[in-house]
Length: 274
Picture 1 (cartoon, rainbow, N blue to C red):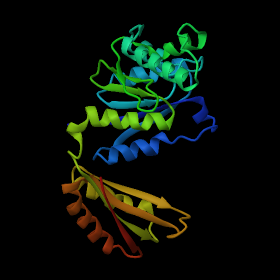
Picture 2: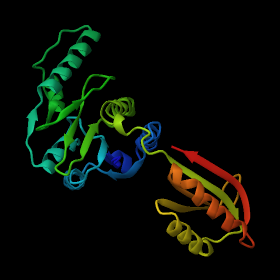
Picture 3: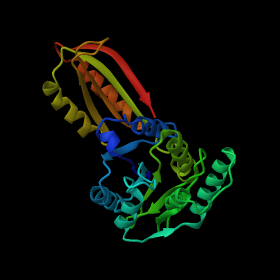
């Protein structure tokens, strides 16, 4: 079966509004381009205890999860430490990760026209980004070589840790998907079919929604009301979604029932496949 995909976004700057999150929309886009979907997402601040608890819960699942942010080496970066604590493993020097970090430091020195000084305090501190939970596998970073890392959980799932910077995180997420998840690409195509309803009440539609779901197992009926849409005004988008082969008969049944409802005006129909 295709696994569930999750997303964790770490950082006080997101929760305080200092920076706007861009990872959620982009991760949905990257998954959808491969016929996959995001099952859940969570935000957490730079709180070691809360992050450790969230990761421990995540590692106990069979989900494939991307975690963005907090893998640096400054005092407010806690993701590496929390991942190790959640797995009850030590943090250890990762030789391959630290070799890549040294390469990056040498590149920086060369670009600045100065000699590389490995023992300089800031260079020693940068190597902390290569101190990872025992058993980690690195994730290549095509932007600046400083890697992310992946950890397997006891529940059979895996969490892939990438930086909070979109310019680094997004190609790293793509690399993980293409290198480790291709067997699930476009394996279970999903579809949606919906219609805009005017002068309709959700409470009155509820029995119909329940009946369609009962008669068409595997299909979800959804209702998305809008009160101030700039084009369509107040309306309800009512539709069905699920595995592509299951959607057409459920949609036909829903549409036929709506056509018989008095006082409801049917507007534009919307379709989506992913």
